Image 1: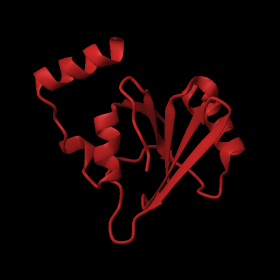
Image 2: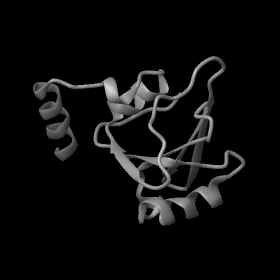
Image 3: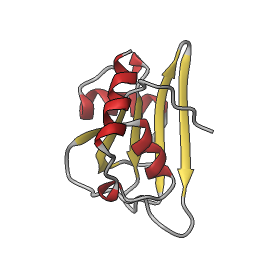
Amino acid sequence: MLKLEVGTRVYLSLRSTDMRCGCDRLSRAVEEHFSRNSLDGALYVFLSRDRKKVKILQWEKDGYWLHYKRLEASTFQVKRREDGAEELTGVDLEALLSGVALKRIKLSKRVEESLTEKAVA
């Protein structure tokens, strides 16, 4: 099970990704798609073309974690684009992995402020 700590940065690729990719190819994709270093401890989320599979790349102290999930009956509810990326909160990622459409999530102002304060602390 993926554990999300407060303040963990999450980046979602909005383009389709070949799910045959391993840690090395996904770390190169992080540099190309996000213009970031994959060793920074953030979570990088990649979806398959049919949006039934997701891979999450994460660096932790001495090596990569590669989390993989495949849905049997539905799809991950994310609008696919040719290019682009989006920064998510841990709450958004948990909702996405649970099958909730991200466009339907609207946090109250109080919750958003609380999450922002925890991320800064």
